[in-house]
Length: 167
Image (cartoon, rainbow, N blue to C red):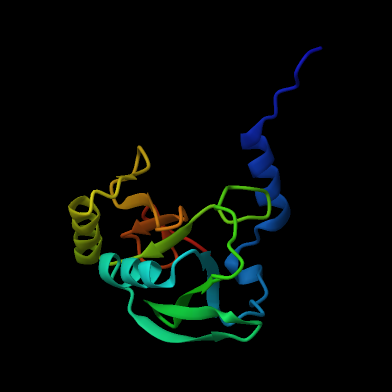
């Protein structure tokens, strides 16, 4: 039985033609932004320490999860009104993270070059492995305390590999 090869470049081009309108022709978004992205952690203190100490994202709020009294809901500041939140479920442990359809691949966070260098130094100091895309020098991928894939990059918001997005 012959396998049919998909022309992925042609598929992307077709999607671009069908859905990506020039900025002047796009309607405005209905959203104000991401209020918070909520991840699940296995250990609240370990997570707080990692995101505060290694990445430099201060803890800005912590309270009981409104749906489960044993669970804590806490938030780290990512700048520009963006928050990264976590839940723990100490009485109902969750399975480890894995990539899956409908799941999250990674969280990419823009940082200034001096913070990028500081974070890379912290990763080195703590022997946390990282890797970068083979064609990019301003981006690092690494795993958080529960295996969540994170990326820090020096590109400013709305820029990808030096190219302005959403234009």
